[in-house]
Image 1 (cartoon, helix red, strand yellow):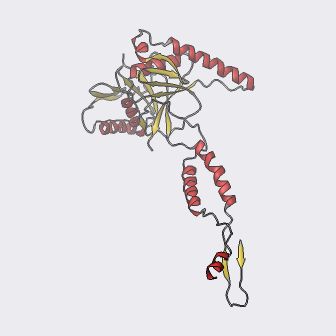
Image 2 (spheres, helix red, strand yellow):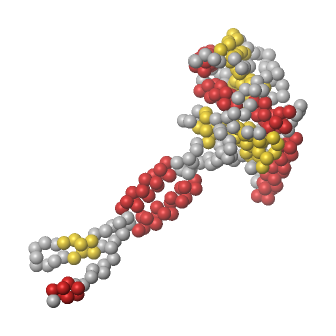
Image 3 (cartoon, one colour):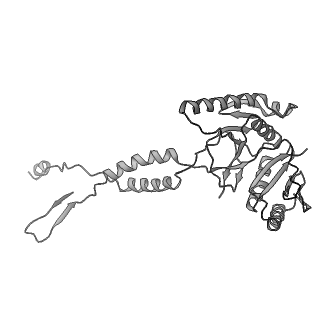
Amino acid sequence: MRRNRRARKPVNRRAAPLRLTSLMDILTVLLLFLLKSFVVGGEVVTPVPGVDLPESSSETTPKSAIVIAIFGNNVMMDGELIITVSAAVDADDMYIEALAERLDAAREKIAEIARYRGDDEEFSGRVAIQGDRDINFEILQRVMYTCSITGFENISLAVIGTS
Amino acid sequence: MQRRTRRGSGYSEVLQDDLEIMPLMNLFVAMIPMLLISAVFLNVTVIDMKAPPDVVDAGDASGQNLALAVTIKDQYFVIEGRKIEKQVIVRSDEDAEDQLAGALRDITTRFPSNENIMVISQPQTSYSDIIAVMDISRENGLPSISLLGAE
């Protein structure tokens, strides 16, 4: 008889509340961390895969620019291989023809976009060089020389800020 | 929020008193992906510079242009310019960078109006060495940097 009573005892069918406190703790910490690293102004620049940028105390924020990456034996622009470092260095001329062609094409593209947008802003000629810390000056000099000859005279060197 | 009071027994019992945190959760869930997209985990900055000119400017006749230059050689840093005594710093010294910084600081103190410096590199000079010299120059009051190749 006693056993039957126990069996008939009504089961508490109220749904157990979800404990969200620990999840809220994680989300709050994550939110604060992300807010700290949030960039309000300037351009977010991601290093090209394979490039180990040198460290510098520079605090200048990058602006929108055409990116030329130099690492290993590669000179790349906008993610495409333009010329190998060995081929560029072995040439007698400082002027890199293949790079100049790509820069000219990029300049025409920028001008076309500006024309469609009705933008009267003058061509900035901005280029950002992402050079690996192990490259030599001879390839950097050739790239910079080609940039300046083709009208991209606002050259900036990308680095990892340490400050 | 649910509250049940047992009347007549002289005390009240709060069975459930949870905060309504779902709106806050929704806000977090919306904000975190947005911030993750714009987060910067690697602080990439830039060094703005001038392209190497075809011919080094000979300077004006009045001698206002200091034509300050640091040449990075395999073994030495060489500091030279107009009105400046040539200085050679041995790179293998432990405090070579401090010596370079001190020399540039002295020049900046003597010629406060000058902000230009030319960093002259050899073909085999490492890019990280060039950046290091540029940092030293900028930190010692010479922010306008040109990068040139040795003849």
